[in-house]
Image (cartoon, rainbow, N blue to C red):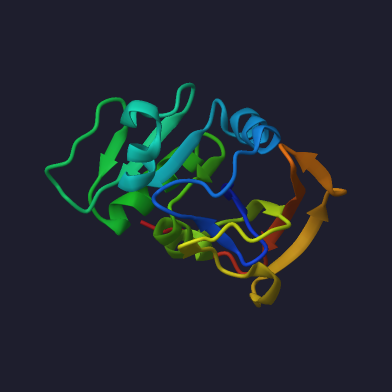
Length: 171
């Protein structure tokens, strides 16, 4: 399966200044445990936002950079969106692939995902970039929702959305 995994504020905001809106240890633990051992797919800015600009450990990292001269160590480097989709499709044959950002990557890959694991934070994080509002999206249905939880002083809810009209990646 192809699964987007992220958190958002109550306005569907997901980031500012190439970083996360909130420090959420419980959500980060969920992210780590869920994606470990799988492939993760991201844009170049997401990779560069990690400590030292290094890929995530215990995962196959697929990185899309529009600049063909940018080659990063320890990742699958691709330089256009069709190549990005092809790399995702190839890794999906081995197991789940997680889309991990940024906003443009989430938006462009949304038609191709099976599920979205979305942690909702019940406050406004002052975001500069936003995720599609899945509650208003005709292709997505909320299929699972946790009870409200506390995470580092923030009220969060873990949700899962299913894409009823997933587009297959065909090459």
